[in-house]
Image (tube, rainbow, N blue to C red):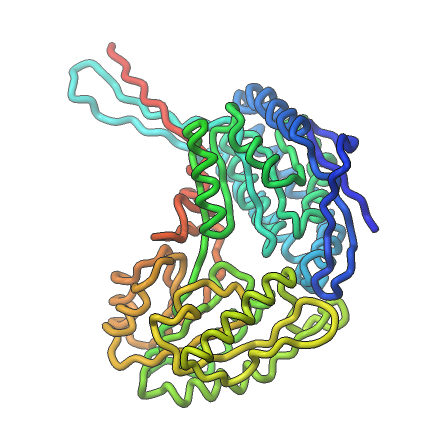
Length: 474
């Protein structure tokens, strides 16, 4: 069993307490690793190290910060097999998928490194003669980065790379479900030669995380997680009036119009719903199908969902992997049972499998209603509820009648229908004739309870800056 140590001020530190975070392989239920949980004192020391390092990091020309990020991208790419191996064991992903995630992390690091010469301010006309208004973009300081379990390597660099190129330093808390891959990233940071204190990585309890997030030196907290976790972060932000950036729950609606390529749409939706056992923020969570094609489309979904098999992806990468833990599986199963009791029809799946691991079958529910819990609450699992509609206006009304607004999907060959939805959908993203994939040059930001701020692209990088207006009389 591997034992990981926390990474503070450019080195792996010795344990200072007895608390351990135990890592479970969700495909087997076996304990595979332990991490020395940081003490409160160690976590505070990490923030203080980041604050000291930031004073010199911010004064480096951004082009020199980019050199460091390119070196880190190289180190991540070289370490992709080791990062992928750790991630596969702790997440239930196949080794190939986990390794590719590490490669993508290197790619997004390189992408943000290239913003070095593009962090621009503005010159604004003044109302006063002989005066210039100059708006500067400046770093915020120390950023606390709270990483989720589902794509922990990619999301790590999705947050850390733009924070660093903008001149901030970071303290990173990986998920306690998937911390080992984060410490493989720490080895890449060490090999890349980043200045000590610029990147600090610690496993910690919720209480210790609160001490980090409320430390006076922390100016921003970025989280990918649940709505409840987002509320907790907003509470933390009150201490310093720190800036929040939150990607929270999602309940992606897919609208299937009568002229859609039904076979392609069915393949895409099933792939979205079963990739990583449905544990994606933008996975298809509710399907609205026009009444004229409803039965035909449901038959396609049922055929494909029924064909999905679950199992340990280290043995067979074609299988659907496990959920993150037993609690997640039990909660999802309870939601399915309540949906059936409320009148939904179980077309396939919906049973608890026997044996080791936290597996759950691909589950299709029809005859669902808009007011059902299964339609209103995020499942974060391989559950697909289907509803029928008669007009596009009705579908739009149901898609928008929701607490979440992260991503959305429409399948149609009618550009008028696509544009109508593009202009009326209450979500941060719309994908036409495809399922979500979060291009890192875009901007991944939610509406409503799906979050504040966002990740990716120019606007995601600018999240990690603050402005200074210089009013210069001459």
